[in-house]
Structure formats: structure tokens, C-alpha cells
Image 1 (cartoon, rainbow, N blue to C red):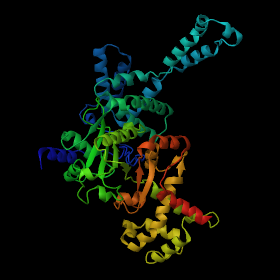
Image 2: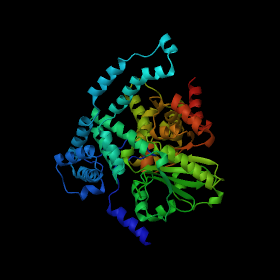
Image 3: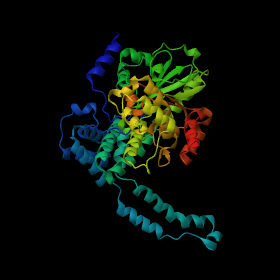
Image 4: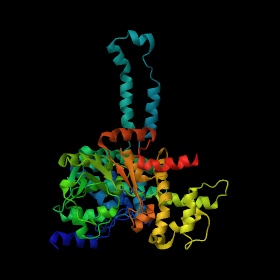
Amino acid sequence: MNKKGLAILMRTKMRPLPSAAIKRVNQMEVPPQENSNVVSSTPNASINPPRDFEQVRDSMLSAILMNKTEILDAALSEFCEGYFSLSKENRRKLLLTLAREYDLDRIQVRELMKQYLGLELPIGEKAQHSSGQQEELSLSAFYRIERNLRHALKPNYEVLFERLNTHPGGLKFLSDIRADILSFLTEENFPSLRALDSYLKEKLGTWLSPANLELHNITWDDPASLLEKIVAYEAVHPISSLLDLKRRLGVGRRCFGYLHPAIPGEPLIFIEVALMKDVAETIQEVLWDDPPIPECEATCALFYSISSTQPGLSGINLGKFLIKRVIDVVKKDMPIISTFATLSPIPGYMQWLLSKLASAEISGPTFRENLLKQEEEGALVDAAVEFSSSKNGMEVMKYLLTSTNYEWTKSAKIISVLRPPMMRLCARYLLQEKKRGKALDSVANFHLQNGAMIGRLNWMADRSEKGLTQSGGIMVNYIYRVENIEENAQSYYSKGHIQATSDVSCFVEDHEQTRD
């Protein structure tokens, strides 16, 4: 093992992996609050001496009010260090102070609105006969109040955000602060704190626009400090060893990340790509059950993992821009690549299906939705006779899917009879189950809003415990057809229309025809 490999291994083992609060983009799930006392950690937290609340609040006020550069830089540094030394409760208290006491001046806004509404527009015959100069003069009061309104509608904490953005380490600090805000909002909905979050999110989205980000092709030759972050933050398909990492960065594979100059050496988001002959049907194909093909034979670029490293950037869709940039780069470097697709999890499927089965169990026959076709029910009851004595197919299905240690996956017969209903219901879940007009599944929503289409469902594609828990082992390929990306994205955004191949849509259409 070389020195770099040893460094990565040692540092990653010595440092705990990121908490579950890290946003997994490819899973796109709301991070579970496993421990309500956990607040986003930073390296500074353990080395900064504790400071009392008033001291940190005063440094925050100084950072907002001071204008002299030398004093301002010192105040910003003191505030950043002091914040990380605070307890969770005092961080919450400080952020609420910022949200409530440094908000906009609503009395001033109301007064300006009254002035604005009191102005008379130059209308009618008088306006038609007035000269350009007269019209300009009559509108000057409008321009003045509109300018003053724009200024008054900016909260006072904008000054702090703007100054931190240009301060060394400030952008990362703002991201960490927002991670805390999001954590606090899951515990209690403070309207003032939510307004603060909304404003900070908008600012971060502007500062982290694609024009300000560098696309970096991550390779084994990168510094160990960067590679250890890939190991630590990869949560979709965890990196099991240094050999695994080296393979993912080697022949037939690519890893691209977005970096920002203000946060050097730390990708904000990264995507892993496999170069293949065909679109993969199982994750085992991607994770090197077989040696890679020569790159000159590859015709497909398969995106198999997208991971965000910053919980505080939740809701800022960097993944959309990253995918498009990577497609452009790969097309330019390898013109032979003609297919761009994903092999993605379906994190919400089993939760949805089990809730449907549980609901059917407690509903009377009149109101019960029968999720199974007649032949599917008969096949399930017959095949599962050694597992369950029930004659109700949905009860049998629920029993099998919730069995200890996924016993159903050890029987070829059970796997065979579960496949038709599981695949059909998965197609229904992805195509028809929606929330506010958009796909209920978070990963589906992510790729569909980026302009992808649903290409194929893959049975028993991920037999890991995580894959079986999330989706019964089913994975899905989303296809990015370059010529249709913008059209698909617009259709999904405006109408909620989901594009899918006939291979997927036929599952739902066949069932509807059977019912008719």
C-alpha cells in the first residue's frame, strides 16, 4: 500500500463518517433525525474554547455594524469561532436572535407603501399629451420610492451574509449555519427562522451558481485529503476498501465533482460514472463483479451515484447542473458514447407499497383496493403455503415482504411469483403516484425535473439490505436523451408529465386494460 492509500485509510478510520444529516442526492431523502441533540459538526468545534452567549452575540453585532476592514475581518473571525463553541441550545437562541432582531424594518416598509399608494399615475388624455420630459418628472417620485422600497425590503442580516461570503472560510460557515437552521426547523417551525433560511438559501444559490463552480475530474492522483472526502461522503454505494476506491477512479470509470474556490479541496457534490457497452441492469455489474471493458468499446455512460457533501446546501439543485456538465464533457472526450443513463434506487417504493397493503388489511371488502390481479393472487397463495396459511394474496405479500432477514429472497419460487406484481406496482408508483403534481418518489422527481425519462425497471438489481428495504431489490434506469432533456424538463415542470419508455408504461397500461 502506498503512502497516499495509507493516509486515506488511516484518516477515514480515525474520523467518524458524516452523520445521517448529510443529504444523499441520489437517494434524495429527508435526512432522518437519529439524534435530536446532534448539530452539524465542524473541525473548529473541538478546538475553539467555549464562549458565553452574550460574547458571541456581541461579535455578531460587530460583524454587522462595523465598516473598517481590519476591525471587520477580526469581528467576522471572532463570530465564526465563537459560534462553533456554543452549545446546540445557544446556537438556536443566537439564530433566532438574528432572525428576529435583524430582520427588515416593517414600519418603514409600511410607510413607504402608503407613500407609494398615495401617488397619482399620469393616465388618460393628460398622459398622452405630455412630453417625454414631463412624463419623466411625473414618474420620478415613483422611481424614488421604488428604490427606497427595494432597500427597505432587504433584512439587516443580509449585511452579515454578504460580508461572510467574502470572508475566508465564510461560505463554508454559511453552509454550516444553514445546516443548523434546517435541523432546528425539523424540531419546531419558527416562522422567523424559516424566513431566514429562505433568504440564506437564495443567497447560497446565487453564490454557488454553475458559473462560480469548477468541474473537477477526480482521479487517484488527487491529494489524499480530497480522496478521503469521497470515501467519507459516498453514501449511496459505500466504498468498502482502498481497492474499491481505486477501481472507481480507474479504467472504465469516472468521478466528477463541483468545487468552489472559497471551499478548496472539498467537492460540494460529486457523481460517479461507469463506462459500459450497455445500460446496466444490476448494481453488481457496475461495482466490478467483472473486469471493466476497454474504454474504446464503451457506448454508454452510466451515472450510478450522486452524493452531496454539504447538508446546508439542501434544496439547491447542484446535481442538475452537474449532470448536464458531465454529459457535455463525456460527449466531447468520448464521441463514441451515445447513451447517458442512471442506475438508481427507488427509496420510497417499499414504504408506499407496505402502507397500501396495511391499509387493505384493515379496510372492509367494499373499500379495499385489490392491488393484485387474480392470477397473481393465486400464484402467491400457492407458492407461499409453507410460509403462510392465509388465502388472501395481499396478506401473504405483506407477510413475505416484512419477513425477518428477507427470507423470501432465498426461495426461487417466491422470487418468481413476486416479480409480476412487484414490477407492475413499482411502475404505478413511479408513473402515477404524485405529490403536488410531481412524482412521489424523491429520486424520480430529481431526475425527471432534470429532463430524464424512465427507461427500464430492473428486478433484483440490488440485493443488499438497503436495496431490499427501500425497493424490494428493484432499481430503475433513467435515460437522458440529450436532444429531449429541455423539452422533458419543461413538460414535467409545467404539467407534471412523466416520460417513460413502452417497457415501463406497458406495466400500467396492461393492468388498466385488464380491469376494463
